[in-house]
Image: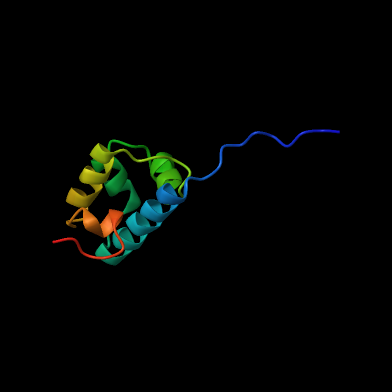
Length: 82
């Protein structure tokens, strides 16, 4: 029989971080093109990050928190870390 195409799975952590980036970006009123530029990504790459289909490394997470004026825990943890 045929095989299923080997599409890469979505990492659950990338999906959570991407969803948080999208939520905070919407709440802060930051345009996706502006955030993409701050992260040195194309708008398409930012959409993949927000969908959890592209990994954002620690440097990218730091850049996102700076651009959105957030503490790092806002994207990486379920509750505040003090």
